[in-house]
Image (cartoon, rainbow, N blue to C red; front, side, top):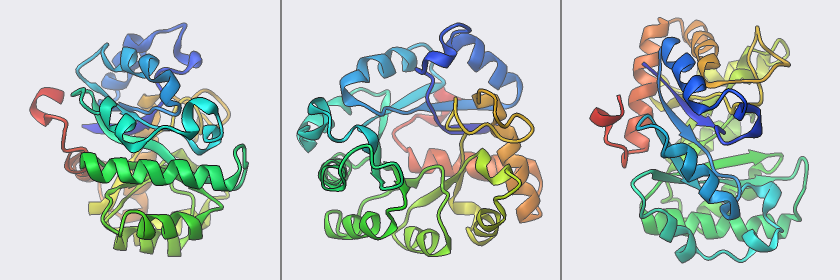
Length: 264
């Protein structure tokens, strides 16, 4: 069984088919569990509505750095974030982090929101789902300064270099790879995959975006996580079955709030 450790099943791109159809097709491809990710706390009810559609779907709560300056997100306190985690469906904090590539929100506001999420993750003892792009130094600094190096979680849709991977692993984080590793010009990222121990790897789609080859440019969906797993297997010189087993074990180890027996 594979797990899509990061997807956005609430996205409008899935509205016409419906979540049940998307999940059914993914299950036929060998994908047995799904983590649908919150990007705006103000829209959390929409995330929860998706998660409640199946015992195979869990969710997170958090603010994407793109939305950090919005009034509904900027001043959310750690205690307010933690309140959402009382639901058994909410198993992680995020997606949170820093994105200086697009800078849709000012860096100082991104950092404020990220810090609140780190504090919430520590207090709730739940893993962080971190988005970082062109912000390696500040991401690592806040993980050390705010979290004291004690926060746990995953660097989602990893597209950084060896240093970020090495320092994230040193902090105890997992590294999640998406369909980007199948792209023709992703040679440097594929080298990072080779360096990260399989015991610390997750796989994801980030659907509906970043569809892997051979579907690049089209809408992504959880069933396509198979192509990312195949590339990991190729780079690690192991079987796809071993990648599925290890990455699924890693997922349930990290998101330990999920009762695995009932999820499978």
